Image 1 (spheres, chains in turn brown, yellow):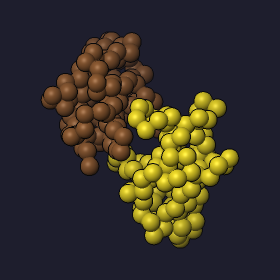
Image 2 (cartoon, chains in turn green, brown):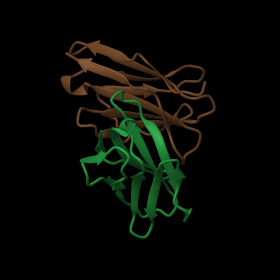
Image 3 (cartoon, one colour):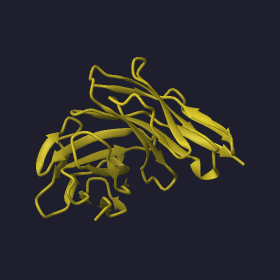
Length: 112
Length: 113
C-alpha cells in the first residue's frame, strides 16, 4: 500500500504571514494525483488544491500553492497571506487507479 | 445535484444496535467511497464502489459491516451490532473517474453509547 506522511502534527502561523505544510509519499506508480484537503471544525472536507503527477508545473489556487518534487516524492502546501479562516486540519492525499490514501493531518493555527 | 448528500448528520445507537447510513453521490459520478474518521482524525478506508459493483472492500470489517450501492437508490453503509469503537464520523465521497479528486459529503457522526 502507498503511504502518505505528514511530519508536522501541528503548525502555527501569524495572520498575513506565509506557512508551508509538508507531505511526502511513497509510490511505485507513475500515474497518480495528489491533493490537499482542508477540514475545518465543521468536519466538512474541502478540496484546496490538486496536482497531476504528469504535470511539471506546480498547481496554484489563489493564496494556495504547492511545491511538487516528483523525484523526491514531496508535495508541500504553501499558504500565503494567512487568514483566520485558514485555521483547520489539512490532509495530504494520494490517489492512483487502485488506491487512495490520506496523511495523518496537520492542524494549522492562525494567530491574530 | 452537485453535492454528495449524507444522511443522517448524527446518529446515536446503543451498543449492539444496528446503524444504517446513507449517501447519495453526485449525479454522473461512477465511484463511491466510504471512509471512517475516528477522533484521532485518521481516515480509514472502508469500501469503494464502481456503480453498483464493489470495487475495493479491503478496509471493511466484514463480520459486522456491509454496504450497497443499488441503481436509483442512495448508497448505504450498515453496521450490525454496533460497538463503542464504531463511534466515528463516516464520510462518503464520490468521483466521476477512477483517478482525480473526490467530492466529500458532510459526514455522519455515529455515537455508540
